Length: 242
Image (cartoon, helix red, strand yellow):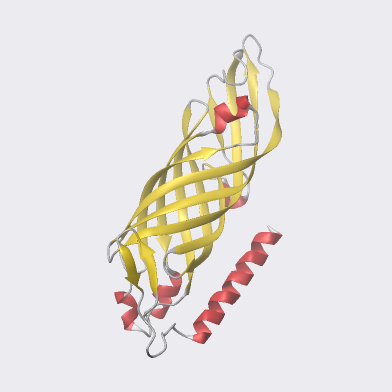
């Protein structure tokens, strides 16, 4: 967790510096700052800040083996010029992620590994760097594409047909690569809800492990803008930014 702490500290220092320097205001005679979205160039206007905190609660539905299961996580990073978001995500099966212990999913069989396995309990947790590019935004709607790249670990236990002895699957470390597309709806000026779909790859794993852990993912994300909420206390115009 040391590298995560350092990253968050540097990120907060950057945000503080951006707040101290004030809003980005174009010089006289220079066109307003613009970004590209799928409908063309969009002016940001003088009230936008170049750097903002990006924080989201990230819930996923996915498949491990043949069993549908839940992955929970959080992500924290920076938003730059409204359309670029980069940071770190921490994820794990079910509800174990917050205390650093991954949850588990139980399977009645695991033919991808061995056809004689009649019960298995598998775990997975990972941390990733993410980059999200906003492709479209309006006052109420937003659409973005996201890539995650990181490293995780898997482990488990199982029993075989005709035996009650519990055997152990040794812990393995994997590369994690995810691609996803999300649509957001802005509930308020400081909170948005997003839904989307994606796919998870584990490119460095053996074929058997890939068959178990590579799968589609469905996403439900709650994105919170604490900086915007705090700024609105003394700057009412903040509520009109989107």
